[in-house]
Length: 316
Image (cartoon, rainbow, N blue to C red):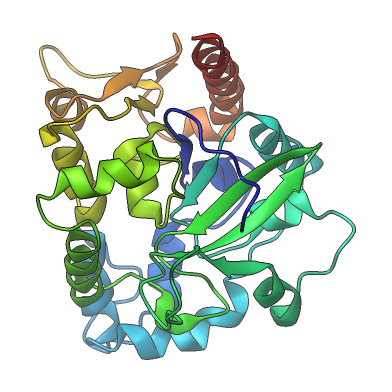
């Protein structure tokens, strides 16, 4: 994968399911309902467990098997033309890496509008980072996809797996725990010097975890749910680095709250050194904001702010 120039810091987009949801895509809650086979749960019962534990509950601890059954419908779709347009706006920005928590392939579809992306086509797009020779059947730390749009090249990493490879999909608590262990081992524990020396010397970013740790990270359409233990660990690790690492910028509409209530998650993000950006937008309570297209307007404002941030970086 030569020819991909290394900047002072990688510029990284962490893309969640929010943009897909803004254009009618499925939610994680809908996936949970789809894989639910536990006969002891009443239909449509309201669950409050964190997502990884909820997946164990609804599947009767058969998460892997149920994801294999659901895999054919996890490829995603591009219905609204505005959906592809917004993803192409992101592809045209000066990102070196896009990390996505989605199992689906909307970004690949947006970058390849004239191709039918079947299993064979998708497999042909995937690459292992230089110096990584061992195939990854699960926990795709070092496997990415080279994409190009309007002359700009970026690497896409499905950090929690992809729909055509059920063994790679991270959903249950067991799988999150194993992924976190693999991430910690791959980053070399507390050996920051080893990690930093290689990219500083022109070496390639070899994993999505390295890109997150070392780069300027912009999170869009990703709520940073407390169950995302791998990413919270990486935020804390990034904060603890002795060497210089990039910033992290979290985009979300400001939530309307009662009285003196605080947004605990956003305060925790700030404690871990994250910049919280609301783009002067406020999300009222209830689902009216989503139905009225409020999220689409927010994402447009966020993308413009990201564009400005990337331009500032490029001039530095």
